[in-house]
Every structure is written in C-alpha cells, then in structure tokens.
Length: 63
Image 1 (tube, rainbow, N blue to C red):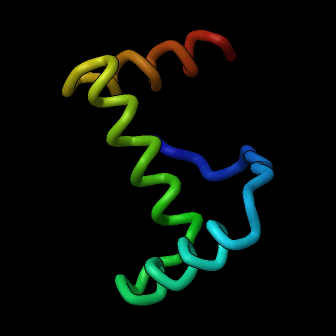
Image 2: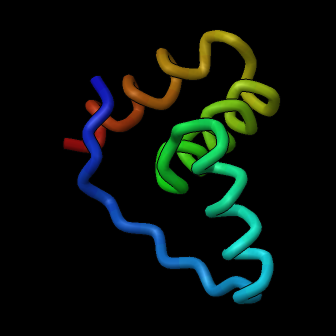
Image 3: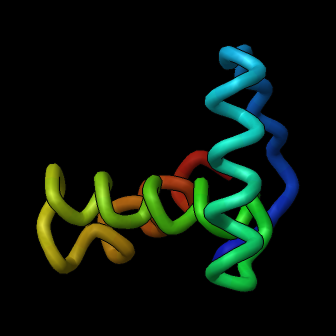
C-alpha cells in the first residue's frame, strides 16, 4: 500500500514552476498529484506493469 510520508524537494526555475502550476490548475490537479503521476508513469515504463509488486514487496522486506 502506498504511504505518502516521504518528502522530495526540487529546485526549479521560477518561470517553469509558475507555468507548471498553471497547467496543473487547468487540469484541476495539484502539482504534487502531477509529480506523483509522472513518477508512477516513469517507474512503470522502466520496471514494467508489475512494478507495484516489485517496489512494495522490496519496501516490506526492508522493515
């Protein structure tokens, strides 16, 4: 199960940030939601459709 407990800090150009926030607003999503979507899409592209099993099993094993 996904837990939203980790923080990721990014430094970006202020103009790109403003454009990104405006585009997110047009889609009625928060910038955080969009970044999480980008991350899920990238992970699935690199690890395949069963990435959740790989990622969450590894995370559970680390406990």
